[in-house]
Image (cartoon, rainbow, N blue to C red):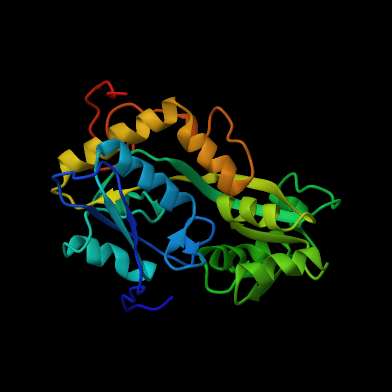
Length: 277
């Protein structure tokens, strides 16, 4: 991915309450990361995260401007003051939480395999022995596969796009594709011969919205709105719409986490509160 910040010519401007006195919220997504954000006919972007934060802004009575840019430049641009927060799915890690605030997670992300429909399911990593795994070249999944190929006895095929990696499974050139959970689910909605399979639960992490360290009040306000959207089922419905699978009761789409932020990470505030739903 390019290391320069390349902004799309058009941005999404979502209108909330007409005549709202406050300035529009400003955020950004990686507009090539389907199905979270992707180009749409007529300009702009669409996807799960676009729908999610358009609804967040509506409930706050604010307009929101969602720009499309290279992910590599989003965090520096936010910290430089270009954005109020990021609408792009961002993995909440201890390292990142030292330099920014996170809302609670609205999705879990984890490594997952997808296989061709009718293939024997993978019950553990030991079932990969002697098989070929496809990955998106240069991704974190490529890194994991290269590092673990000898340990588990599989072969790695790296492709320029994950779409090509999925096609390798469908055509029989590879046994399984390794990617993130939402990407695997989305690919399954586009190819009936491709189905989600083994999930590596130990890699699970929160996808949350990051804010500059000084934006405590705005982080907390968005955090409360996300909680309300979990309670009334909105996030779960958006998840099923875009990923094609109904979230389980213990998925982040349905869990209201205590406090504000991601429990256990820097910037988390354990103070109890009641979301004004």
